[in-house]
Amino acid sequence: MEKTSTDALPLYKNFSEKQETICIFGTGDFGRSLGLKMLQCGYSVVFGSRNPRMSSLLPSGAEVLSYSEAAQKSDIIILTIHREHYDFLTELTEILSEKILVDVSNNLKINQYPESNAEYLAQLVPRAHVVKAFNTISAWSLQSGALDASRQVFVCGNDSKAKQRVVDIVRTLGLTPLDQGSLMAANEIENYPLQLFPMWKFPFYLSAALCVFFFFYCVIREVIYPYVYEKKDTMFRLAISIPNRVFPVTALILLALVYLPGVIAAILQLYRGTKFRRFPNWLDHWMLCRKQLGLIALGFAFLHVLYTLVIPIRYYVRWRLQNRTASQATSKTENPFNTSYAWLNDSYLALGILGFFLFVLLGITSLPSVSNMVNWREFRFVQSKLGYLTLILCTAHTLIYGGKRFLSPSILRWCLPSAYVLALIIPCTVLVIKFILILPCVDKTLTRIRQGWERNTKFSKSPLNGKTDI
Image 1 (cartoon, rainbow, N blue to C red):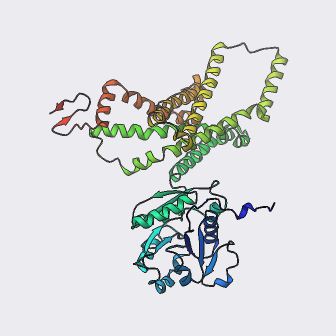
Image 2 (image 1 turned 45 degrees about the vertical axis):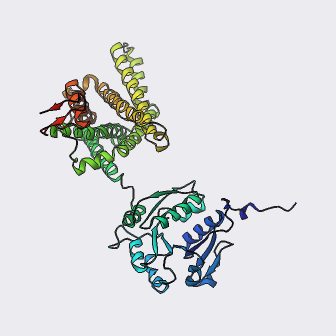
Image 3 (image 1 turned 180 degrees about the vertical axis):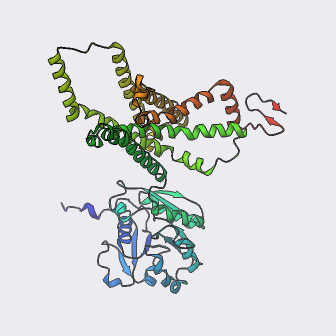
């Protein structure tokens, strides 16, 4: 029996009697990858090239012609060329009339030109139907089967029928089309691949600033101060001890900053007496970055756990333990068991373990694959109710860590308290204000406002009791 090569079989079976022909202008990496994917999905592909005879790397089964000849083979033409090379299209105005031109180009920087590439193409060929698509995926994602990369393809265009045909092609290729509306959205779509973690910049900068501040703060207290007053060299603390103070402090503050904007928003709504006024831009941006702040906080919490686990194997810790054991053996003394200290220590560890567990749970539920499986009420319960419980546990973990030393003057060095004291300011503030907001008298008013009641209107109908207030 003759063996059939699986490479020659299309991944998608086209059951139409006649294969649809797609024309691709450009024979670069993206054009070749897109053409190969289309051939595998049952399309007939013809390439348009300025040098047809030199195009030897194209997938087998595809035809290579000049631009004008290739354009006559199909009414859908995908332009995989840069904007700088669009000028030749003016010579093909008649041929491209009433055809669908799919622009896949991107720029080198955001807002490089006054108008988007797709809008510029529509001006060059005014009688063609221009659609923006495929610019958010790469040649590598097409070659890897799109399972190892983003599957989303943003599509926009002024002609609904032309846009629908492109959407059908995207679905046939196994990708996910997202209709973004008219061609006016092309500028935003073209800027999207050029953005580097747009929603992560503020959380990254904030966490970096906190880390740098607390690192130098701890260096002053634990390295410079002992050297100045006691001539002790404690530089070794820079590797483990100080980072293990910086990471939990940063994690706790970032976790509190996840819930602080919600508290501020509630206060603004109570002050204004309405929900129909926009929040300040800084608060809007802050609230949009809460997920990123929480995930970075979780990362610092993980680092704190890892650094804590290595404490027993540190040379400094083993040296202190051996010296203490030797001194007790020499002096024939022993430390009596302190029940109060044991309770504090076990409570400190238990609160830390429970807080970290809920912290991880919050991080897991924020993943799209998990959040898509729960309804809004369930998601809000985890992120809000359990989130505040996590903040309470982590704050209590830090409070018990300080114990009796929390407000003791003996911990001050150059009038500077320990880093964990500073770390408690924002979390405690958030929890105190939240406690006030959930008081029945305050919560009832806030609930009415969020359901549409307004304090400053002459006639305001309460959605709770159906009465009209004057």
